Structures are given as structure tokens and as C-alpha cells.
Length: 527
Ligand SMILES: Cc1ncc(COP(=O)(O)OP(=O)(O)O)c(N)n1
Ligand SMILES: Cc1ncsc1CCOP(=O)(O)O
Ligand SMILES: [Mg+2]
Image (cartoon, rainbow, N blue to C red; front, side, top):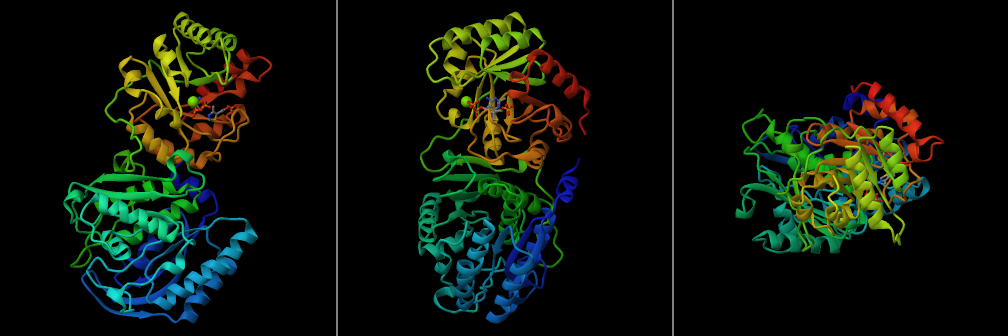
């Protein structure tokens, strides 16, 4: 199954762009609709102004009337309601005020009545990449007052020039930009992606660095909220960047419309822009538009993520022991007798996951599990208790994202243990991949009762995207709600292997259930 089949088999999510028309086709509404379509969504537009422009100049900007802008918003809401909205060029303060009021009334009522969250991404366009100032309002440096959007938007995406105008500060270095982005986030009560793609400052010369200030992102892991991150990509040497900001913000809206969390939308959209610049052309005399290159699936095109707020970043110079063999059907069990029974039934990889808070026999159980692994020449992973796993030389350790910041990863790597890492999103799997682990777990895919999960089930569509990105780079295992009658659908995503709890441990005959799962899983073909 290809990405396209997966996305077109479902109803396309509706994404709106509220922006200006670029007669040159590289930016504005034209770039947005091309992006939205390329990422599998249905695009609708509310046009704020017409611009007469080509790749080198803007000769005229003509705003639509307030009546016309409102009519577009209302008629769309009555039928083609949005899953996400991107706001781009607004021609004057009246349009900002009107839109602020509309978001606060009509859109709010719609969200309340339908119990949905519509994410709104604001690209505060002020200056075109060809140097022209857009807004017809001539008050201080063409600056519009975006405060009517306070508390109504998910994310604002200023470039460095826009950040400087919005914050009223000269931005000399990364630290200045970070402070300004945090101040903006406070002022607008929203998340901020401060784009550093425009070359200029020395600290931006080698890499294109964006600053992501997250104050709140529903569905993202708690440990990655109220935090700032630096997203660094190798700089693509090209002057074809016309419409890159429009493309980025409409890509973020599109990825969110598919149900991905904000952290994911930001990293996927950045990879999309990087690839779009790489493959760009130059139809006019000036900077060309970005190519439309589909949903990003090259790991090397994704940004490196690091912390920007004093919180620890994960090391990226470690090497963990590789697996001796495929994970296959990977049982995760809570007691040693079950572990022994499944090893006897042929399991070659298994995990001991003990969750009783006060288990006085913990170390004894871990020693026994590790010894059984040796007896059966199997890969035994210990969940959570990495010190005991190292002390007794387990084959490997399995850690969740939160656990990664508590553990001594360097000690685990240097002690020769394998490391498996959990992930629940693009953002988390990118962080996991920066660690060079022995495998990456993707979950939870389906609802599970084994564990209270803080995130929603990922589902097969997301799993397929994750696999497209990581396959061949790391062994991949899907976990969560995997049972016999779901194996065919899971195999179609091309994920290497599966981890199971209840499908084995709650069966009347766990050994038989394990053997049946193995026969079925190994009998199915990858696509
Ligand atoms: C193979 C596999 N995948 C994911 C998990 C979950 O690990 P973690 O996120 O650390 O959560 P707990 O298992 O500790 O509740 C796993 N154990 N195994
Ligand atoms: C530990 C864990 N981590 C993500 S889902 C999960 C439990 C999976 O259990 P089951 O296979 O019973 O749904
Ligand atoms: Mg854990």
C-alpha cells in the first residue's frame, strides 16, 4: 500500500488558507493550495487581496472588501468546514480585526457545537521574499497589530525579520531570537516557530535553524510541552525560496488536519520545505518556487532536534548493540513463568516488564529472566530497570521517552547492551533515531487496556508514515492492541515486526497463541 492509497482511501481533510493571491504562482494562495493538495488534503481559500507580482517584483496590492472576506469565511464554514486553517497575508488592520472577531465568534461556536479543535496557524507575512512590503497599512513600518488573534491561534511562524518587528528588538544571535520568540508566545498565548531559514546572521550560516517554543500542544507528550527546541537542518544552497514561509505554514496546517500533533506537524513541514527547496526550479528571472515533493519520507531530510531551554538533550554519539536476529513476534510479559513458557514455545526475543510498584523479588526475577535468555539463546530485554539489566548483563533494555532522560545511556551503550526505545509520534521517533538505538517501537497503534496511554492510538495511517520514514534505518516494531485479526492490516504497513501483551498473556493457552501468531505473521507478505 502506498502513501497515496492510504490517504486517498480516506476522506480528505479540509484545510483552509486565508491569504493573498500571488499572480506569479509561487507564494500565497497558489503555494498554499498546491501544498495542501500535495499533502493529501482538500484546500479551500478565502482570498484577502490580489497581488500583481512576478518572481522579481510586486507592482500592485488590492485588498478585497471586508464584506467579501467575511462572505468567503461564512460560506465555507456552512459547508466545507476546516480541520485546520492557515492565515497568511492580511492586507490591512480592518482585515485583521474582522478575522480576529470571526475566529472568536463563528469559529469558536462551530468548534463548541461540533466538539472539534480547529488548529489555526498564523504566518505573519510582512515582507515578500523579493523585498516588497505588502500590507497597505502604512502605520509603523507596515506593521499590522496582530493582537486581535491573541488566544485564538495554535502557532505563529515569523521569520527573523518578522520576529524582530513583532518583538521590537534587534536580534543579533540565537539567544536574542529565543528570548523574542518566548516573549511573543506569552503575548499571543500561542506556540511559536521562529524561522531561521533566511540566511544572514552568522549563527545561521551552515544550518537552517528554527526555534520551536511550545507552550501547549494537545496530544504531545507532557515532557515535550512548556519547552523550547532547536530544529537544525543542513542549509540547502539555493535562492529558490519564493513562498517558503507560505509552504511551511500550509504544510503545518495540512499535517495537523491529518490528526498529527503540533510537534509532528512542525518537523514534517520543515522536512517538506527542505526537500521542496532542494528540488526547486526557476521559471522566472527571480527566486523560483519550491517543488511539491509529497509527504516527506527521507530520514536525512528531517531536522536534528535539540533542547534550547537548559533541559537535557539526548546524546547522538552512542552505539548500542545491534539485534542478533529479527524481533519477530515479540512478547512483553510481566512474570518469569510466562517468560519461560514462551521461550520454550520458541520465542527468540522477549521482554520482562514488571510494573508492581513494590516488588521485593524484582532483582531475583530479572536475574532469572536473563539466565533463561542465555539458556534458550534468546534476546531478553528488561523494561525500565536499566541498572539491574546492566548489572546482570541482559541482552538489552527497553526504555520509554521519559525514561531516556533518567537513564545513563552512555553506561548502557558502553556495557554492551542493546536498547529499544518507545515512540508515539514523528517527534519522538526522530528523537529516538538520534540515539542510534537497536530498535524503535511505534505505538500504541490500536486501543489497549494493558496500559493507560496519555496519547491517542496512532492507527495504521500514521504507522505507515512512520515505517516509510524509518524502514531500513532501524528495526521497527509496532505495539498496542495487536491481535490475530489485525495482523494482515499491520503487515501491509511494512512494519518489520510486532510486540504483543494480551494477545498472548490473556489467551487460554499462551504458548499456542504465540505459535499461532508467529505462523500467521511469518506467513504474511510485506507489500
Ligand atoms: C516493545 C515495547 N514497546 C513499547 C513499550 C512501552 O515502553 P514504555 O514507553 O517504557 O512504557 P512501559 O512499558 O514502561 O509502561 C514496551 N514496554 N515494549
Ligand atoms: C506497554 C505498551 N506500550 C505501548 S502499548 C503497550 C501495551 C500493549 O499491550 P497490548 O498488546 O495488550 O495492547
Ligand atoms: Mg518504561
